[in-house]
Length: 466
Figure 1 (cartoon, rainbow, N blue to C red):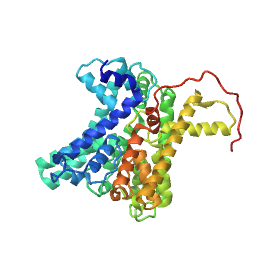
Figure 2 (tube, rainbow, N blue to C red):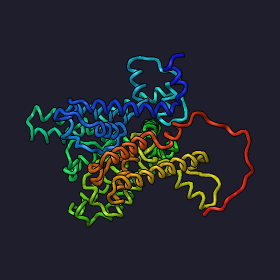
Figure 3 (cartoon, rainbow, N blue to C red):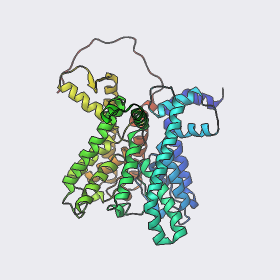
Figure 4 (cartoon, rainbow, N blue to C red):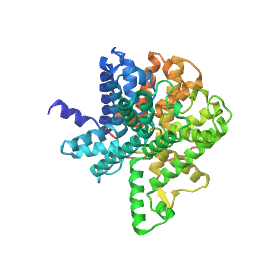
């Protein structure tokens, strides 16, 4: 038996996925170290290249060098490819390439794909993957087209017709992919996208791309299939919602609730703050509040300075960032369904019920246990990372906590702290982004060689809690 086959047998699917992301990050770092990747032709340090590759593959958005000025067109193209690779998932992308090359998809490949998409069945996996690719490129293409109506005229005025059109198209494609994949990396320099704070077109297009990317692929198809069925049969909007799968219902309700609640909080807390939205007109304040609430769902674009946020707003940011987007999406965080399971389980306990029932469906107890485990491990990793970063880099605790949550939840928003990091801090944030993308639970499983099944149970004894 050759070494490659031995390694494939020894490693679990979760371990292979974890190593796949690590391999993509290292390859990306080596490509970004090439002289042709930097704008001035010099070799970028390995740490900065590694950080940039990690933030791209893990679709985070935190940067230690300015993307617009430091990298050449080749370097930006590498970053774009890494963002797309990370958004789709390493295993999904690899399997997709095998399908394009007409290679046979083995059972092991299907198991890998199932684990990478966090599904619980092998049925229809390849068909599901095809739909992911088609849907992704369709939405990104539509987003790029919408952006082009804004960017092409803007660059034509600055650079002339030919160069303006080409540059406008490039910016449209880059930001459409970055927004849909919830990466939050932009090409507008240190100011980011703050220049578009008053542009309804930019805000609406970006928010829609972020929401579509963060909803999750299985929610997409459930909605599309129900829309088709409703058009044929003539169901009302309420009936169509009732026919959705439980996961889709919980995801949609939680997503809308978090976006609206977050926008209301930011509007109230920052209304008079001149460092954020205080100087905006009333419609701009409403738009900026909704944009902030949406972008915290692991997107990372910002239409105003995050360093000027009041402490109350920062707490709301931490809460929304750690929740993140939805399962089987381009977003990070503990996921909306996980948060919903915890909230519903708490309500069940308060009401004195034994079973978790929502929308006339019973959610298994093991799902609640998994939600609790994911949340606890994520919280422990977050606390440990905050403590470690504060001890090594110093600075304000608010900034340290904000930056750490942004990295672990793969958000990418910054209070101007990441750019000041030294070597140790860069490595800590890099590790946080990696953990946030693969998931703390996946890392724990990575070191688990085999499951041990208990052959007996100990006597039961209760404890007092609360």
